[in-house]
Image (tube, rainbow, N blue to C red; front, side):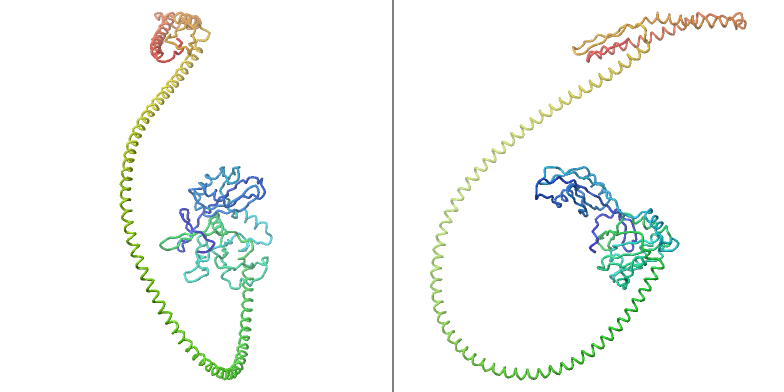
Length: 581
């Protein structure tokens, strides 16, 4: 794949762009990491960027970075930019790194790390609205001079080509970007062979491009309506291009592309016309140049043919003279070689005789040495055989002794391990029993404490309620006297009033203040309306009230008697609680 693309292992966030070509959109997942650097107190001491990056990668595990690079480095801080496969991984990495610290070798201080999701630079609606509103050389009524053209850069060439060609296909590019709306016009500078030679300045509507490599290309896409332009810009915001290969492995690659709105009136009618005129001029110049080159080539071919003919004649003459010279030299050489051959044959015959004599002497000596060597080998073999037998017998005896000692050690070790296991089991049982006992004591104390707090709270609430109800009246004490510990203190309650006496006094007051007054008024104003046989006894009302009050007081006393019994048995197993009648 192209050098600008990276392998993608997670395609879960892919958004379909043009499935027939295997093109998708994928959100850009980047984050920035800022590391606060310590002050360098020693001369010649430096901080390793590689070590800092490795620490950051180690802190982010089990998550990994697709890329991690340093974008700014000063004496105070170091800023890095990293990229991951998905947005979820970016959030997890930010949680792993943000507000954490790292420790570098050779520095006692810890370095603070801050991490955050990176902001993606992409033009917004406000940008192109303000640009075209403030640009005085633009006419929003004309196409190309209004927000309707998208300029895309660094598109991988191989992803938009037919299988047989190496350049992007204009039909494929158009079908891809027609997903956002109907395309009015489109321009791919790479497909124009004369675009390199167009030298008109940008202000006139033309723009020169870089054609150093064919890995990536630029494209201008002009839509018919503003809604399609908006949809394209919004869909491409914060996205990179994803390509899934149509093969068995289904490999996926991503490429970062640059998206912007056209600010140069590149696809305006005026610019298109100027480029067409410039292209026609260049085509005419190209035809004239080709005609001139053709004429020059024909002249050059005629001149070369004439020179070649003359040169061939000279070569033939030179060759004839050279052959005569070579023939004479060859004859002299053959005579010299014949003399040298005869001399060499004589020397060779003498040398062979000498070598034959030396060979005979060498063979005789070699036979003598071989005979002596064979005798030595036989003697040493017999000696080594005897030594081997003695050594084997000694080794067998030593091995038997060692095996016996090892068996005894194994038996001792097994016995020791059994005793150790038994001791550990007893210790674990004892430790478990102590832990359970300790836990039971803690739970008992906690339950008792909670129960005491609840009872104290209830008694405080009852005391406060009774205090408000009988404020200013006499109170008698009816506290239970259980067994009291030395640490607890029981506060005596005030004596309660005589409820019968107090009730009679209250009812009498009510009778005098309300019943008698009402009776007087009834007699005065309404007495003539009562029949003669109707009895009216106001004192009977007072007796009914007194009876009801006595019933209520009896029920209340029965409840208090039951409560006293309950508190008595409760205090037998706990500290006493103050009690109010």
